[in-house]
Length: 219
Image (cartoon, rainbow, N blue to C red; front, top):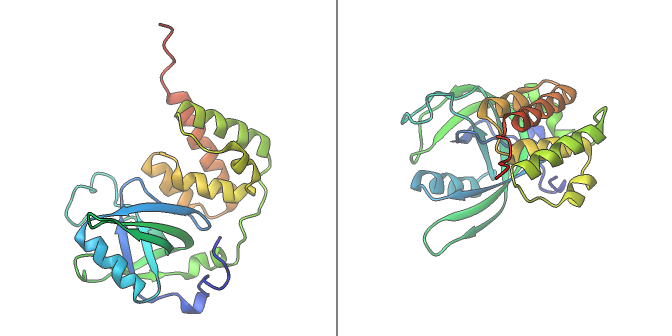
């Protein structure tokens, strides 16, 4: 969670937001997403964000359009604040985005320096700025059990003690951001109107991932 010194207020949110369309990638409020930036247009975007509000919007292209030069976008994304970055000797930027607030795309504007930008509607998600993501889910024990089974099944190494220490919705938001879930499942979680619906959708997604995993070989 961003320190209050760096957390934007609702009134300070920008009227124009650069967006980074990336298939199967979302960021949730309160989560942290690492990104490897190497395309010139997105290096331009990061440089421009540093000169202004430090915010970029993560939004998924719609299915079957990700390969198009200008794919149609889902109408709901989430803005993240650049909270750390480093430069590499081969011209890349390694950044960390901290999720701040979701938005709906009111309209898309002309590209600038190669990257896309939108006019966001922040109002439907005003509560994201006021939420500390400590809301409890009804059965944390079941969530922990299924999540840890999923992580072991997918051979994803995450500190289980760290997971146990996270408040319920912080855990859901972080794992929905980082785990390799289907893009449509991630989008449904992002758009969920309530925390309980978000938790239910996340739990259903990782349960489905377990059921779809191939049975271990007996050889």
